[in-house]
Amino acid sequence: MAGLADAVRAADFMALEDSYVPKDTCCDRYEYTITIVANSQPKTVRTIDISPTAPPGLIQLVAALNGLVSAPGLVSQ
Image (cartoon, rainbow, N blue to C red; front, side, top):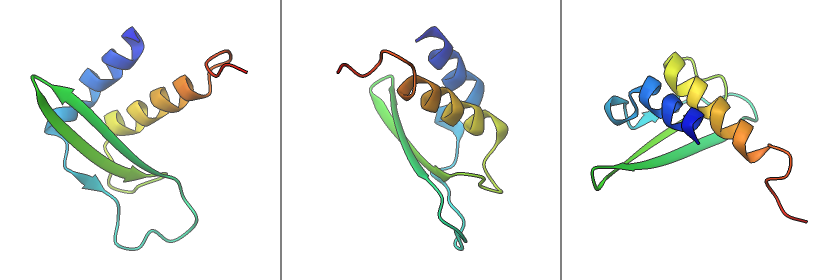
């Protein structure tokens, strides 16, 4: 969880634009909607895989989240 918190800070999440989804999404891509609450204020940001406008910090945050949901042992069987 510390790594995730670091990724949120590195992305400067609360200062990001609300969307990095281009008008033409072209191909079959994953869409990500991330909501974080800081100081009781929610912030939601949307992006897609390989968004040409997403800043590097947001791309790294998406990678960190994907790493968490695909971590072995995360899902009980």
